[in-house]
Amino acid sequence: MRVHLGSDHAGLDLKDHLVTWLVDHGYEVVDHGPFVHDALDDYPVFCLRAGEGVAADRAEGLDSLGVVIGGSGNGEQMAANKVTGIRCALVWSEETATLAREHNDANVVSVGGRMHSLDDMTRFVEVFLTTPFSGDERHVRRIGQLTTYDETRELPPLPESALRGPDA
Image (tube, rainbow, N blue to C red):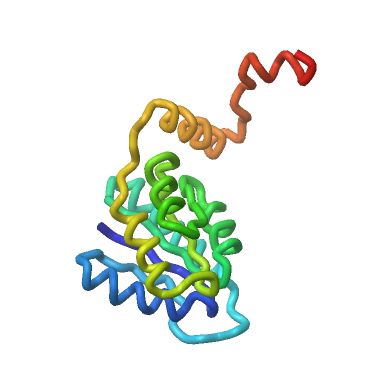
């Protein structure tokens, strides 16, 4: 499996650690940077490229996922989610990493380099990379709604329960 990585200065140490960890565990790594510490760097530069790499690989039918890393992971998640076809989840536990894959078929994960220990974050990434999508109909349906919106910008129809109003 190919794994695209992107971060900012706050995530650089974790990203560099993950490059080695991923290679040692048989993953093909594409590192989109940064490659040196620059306290003034901008995470969108690197995280958008990681997202674009995952989207391009998946469009070609390749098995590819991504990891974006920052201080909190929030901005990096927002950047990756701007890429058409990317579903990036912010994870802070093994459970959120599992659910991101099982329920949301997330194809990029975001972690906060200043929020957890190196061992914990590595474990979150490992869980994310090794957990398959469940394929349950309700999850497929919901992801389909997101995909359709991503492609058309048309909102999904409201369910009958929402058409009755708050006083129903």
